[in-house]
Length: 234
Image (cartoon, rainbow, N blue to C red; front, side):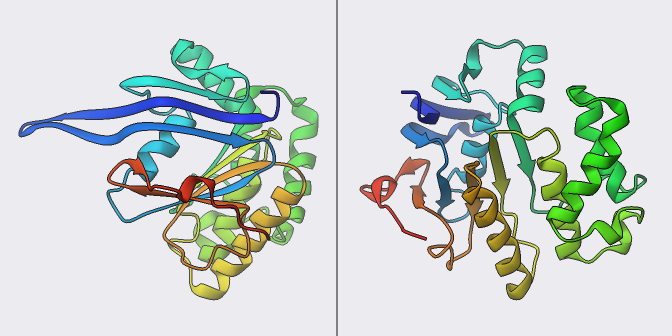
């Protein structure tokens, strides 16, 4: 379907352990439509981050297929997968993952340098526009360590948007923030979604209903019965 941004069919992910095989994701079928803001919720160990990593092509399913932004990820080589990810996916992490020796602006420019889809002469200007978009342009030439947690997460969101990806994937983006800053970050995600960007966010947050268009609940690596189809209206 042309409006399906992400599709999973029969997706299973297992890991070998000394005590035997561990199943992190156990047979998931899921469609996420273009322009949705989906929250993946569940307890620790329910498979949320494993699922997100497979959507990003960081991890491959043991069984099943993952389509995202027009590509069947299992069919791509590692180099093709890296190119696809640079073009199609923006990643936001709980602990920001900003490079400490680069300025905030240089961190935002880094994905542009890797993908080389934006002319070198335009990268600084684009980084500044993105930092302005997330409200921290005045922090552009500082090192990440000098910023607050909320500012670092805003910088990480700007970096995720560097190559204008259609998919934004976030793993516990508010998990290291206080409640007020968490609300600010969630509002920013909602604004980005209003611009028709597809967002999938793994979260422990209880108060996400007012921001997302749908919640998908995982229990022991499976979709909770009925939860994947519950629509929420922002």
